[in-house]
Structures are given as C-alpha cells and as structure tokens.
Length: 551
Image (cartoon, rainbow, N blue to C red):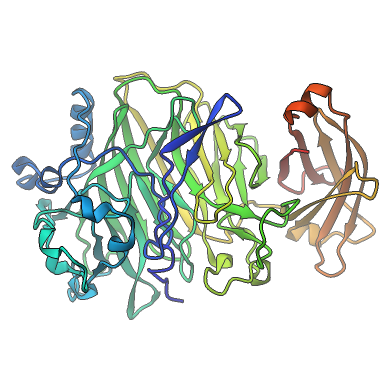
C-alpha cells in the first residue's frame, strides 16, 4: 500500500510553550497539524541561524577526504566549548505567516536527488516556511568526500503564489525525506523524514505516518519550560546500487547540549533505524530525555465520560506504553487523555526496551477512511549496550484536538549529566507492528472502564491474549494477581475464557475511599494506581497491566 505523503505529514507538533498546571508542572502547547505535513511534530524551535550561514559549510568540511560520525562528534564537542549563539531569523517573514503559503509549495518529484540513477534511495527536500522558520544545511558524502546540496527555487512548484521572486536563491532547506521501494519494487515511496527541531519519523511497509521520534528531549514538563535542540546540519551518504541502508549524520545544537548523531535506516516491515549518538552538555539540565517518542491519544476504549461529539469510537496514533525490564517483567501502560497533566515514571535499571505501541489493528475501532489509524506504526526502542541506572518517563497532556501530540515517552538517567562530560548512547528504533515476541508471552488487548449500578464501584474489564493463554482450557483458568494502591479497595474479581475470541477476560471491581473535604473542594484527589498480571501455579503468563485511575 502506498504511503500518502500528503496524509497529515506535519504533525511535528509544537511542544515549545509550557503552561503551568497544578502549580508544579508545565504543559506543552503543541501546534496543529497541516494536511501537507502528514504527521509532522514540531516544536517551533529557537530562532534559526541565518539561512546563508546554514547553507554554506566551511571549506574544510567540503574538502575532507573521509567524513563520518567522529568528524561530526568533533564539531559538536568544539561547539559545546563555545558560548551558544542564538540563531538569527533567515526565512522571509511572508513565508512564516501561517501554513497557507507553505502548504501550497510542492517539491518537484522529478528533481529528487539521485533521481534516474537507479539507486535504492532518493531524497526530496522541504521548503522553509510555516512553522519551519529556519534553514538547515544538507550535504552529500560520496566516496568519502563532502559536497553541499544547494537550494534552488527550480526544485519547487510555487504555483500561482505571489512574491516568489522575493525568495532568496540561497534560502536553504527546512528538512528532507527519503524514498525507497518499501511497498513496491517499482515505486519510490516516502518512508523517512527529518523535519523540525530534532524530529524524525518513519513507517513500516504498508503503513501511514503516526507516532514520531526525536534526537533528544531537554527538560520536558519542567517548570522552567522545555528546551528544543535542533539539527542544524546533515550529511547523507550516497548509497551504492545494492545498498539497502541509508546513512545520515546530523549535528545538533541548543543552549544546553550539543551532539552528533548517525541514523542508519533500512526500510521494510519493520523499518529499522539504528541511532548512534554522543552528547556534550554545555550547562546543567534538570532532565535529559534519551530516545524520546511522541504520539497522540484523543480517546480510546478506556476513555470514560466522552468529552467529544465524534462518530469515531477511538482516535489515537498509539494506545499504550510498553516497557521491558532487565528482570524479565514487561509493563503495559494504556494511554489516556487526562484532565490534568499526568507524569508517570517506571524504574528501569538495565532497560531492555520501551515503545509507544498501536496494538489495536481493527478498522472497526476507528471507522476513519481517511486517517486509517489502524495502519499507524508502533515504535519500539531497543538499547544497544548498557545505559546504566535510569527510568522511563511517560508524559500525558490534556488535549481536545487530535492535531496535537499530547503523549511523550523517553528514558532519563538517574544522575543528570555534568557539563563537559560526554554521554554516548546507541539504540535501534523499530517502526511497524505488531512485533513478534514483543512481548514474548501474554498481553493485554483491551482496557475498558465503567461504573457499577451502585454509582460508586468502578468496574475494569481487561482482555488478555497469547498462545499460552489460548492453550488453557476454560475449566483451568489462570490466576489473576490484582493489586490496588491507596485510595480504593478491591471488592471482587472474575476471570473467564471468552468463547467468542478464545482469549481470557478479567473483570474486577474497586470501591474508592470517601475523599477528604479538602480533596473534594480542590478536586485534587490523587490517582488510584493498579497493577494486574496473570499466572499459573509456577510461571507468570502475561505482561503487567499498569494503570492510573482518577475519579
């Protein structure tokens, strides 16, 4: 199935503005998607360097005989030792007046880099404008030598747009996308995009853009506000005719951290992007987010008290966070659209992996012929090497608009970095799903929440599936281990085989405690934390369902 490049590719949603919530945290204000961006994300990062300087690399770079990750790392280290220079606007203001002008600009497919050379990858470029108010430098590495990719108005179709002659001839690009025969051997479909801040996204074969990733998150949901680093320069290795992989190097800059990245991508099902990075802190940060992922969750089967008049049963690009721990435990945290900012941490020493997953693959759950959210990719991050002590953090932000990315997840170290001490991280990012053996045993397929007839008791209905569970006879049910935290009491549970699906259904009830007067007045009752897993007499059979419930 072809990937529609125009299908909401611009959810690089703006997570730059922070709103104070609960007098303790800040809420990120995210931008609306545009039809052209088909899933972009974008934070509107700090103001850009002049387009001229971004598009003209130093001659020392252009004449290098060999060039790769270590050379970019040396640039990043040198950059970290110099004072940060705030980028200066370099994009004409009329290009930044909303997205209408920018949306109308089209890259000419016949002008794709390496078009007609019978190579396994081609590149197309994004024009600056809209929320993308900076230009980045893009270079090509061929046989060890570096050369810049020059901007030209001839690469773009401006239609009948006014003021075309005012666009500088050396403006530069906002980003780029890679095309490959991912769906058909005869069609070069878009499968990988770098656009805005440090955002990148991909898809597996036959999928639509959905959740996205970033190179680094700095101080997400912190009172002083989030800082958005950005990739200022890229170097793309020209592929050979038989190369399945595409290699991209990137230089990152920000007031607090500089860095070097190498992305090695291989399209398929799944598409795999291997990331190698080194970070150079300039100054202390409160929270460093490694391998950050972003997504959208407006409503799902677990949403109670529907706040939206919408014909669609569910609207989301991901429906849960999955975490794999060193001790063999797998944690499944269904996503929510909370009433207030919600931040949850999961201790993860020796992290084996984490991801934002789109488990529900049934069209009937979405009923959307345009967005096809059942075809959005799950994203799984697999650390390479030891990351040390740390935790996975999940941030869920209230939203009333599906155009906003309101979910982010990342790993953060237990001890935040010291300026001058480099940090190295490597990992693989898988885009696709469902993934084999992730998790290896039983898993939750649905979470439903309701209120009992007495008006006080809450009812939770969980569906579990998996090969080992299906092999159990209906008269030999697994044991459900249900843990309810402070604020409520478990008052009953029942597990039974579902004769329709062959899987198992657990129904349990909790009775919330009577709230104190202060909690009632402030409507600030703490959430009730719950955990559930299934086991037999000897072994754990499923992942652990983990959930926060607010009355």
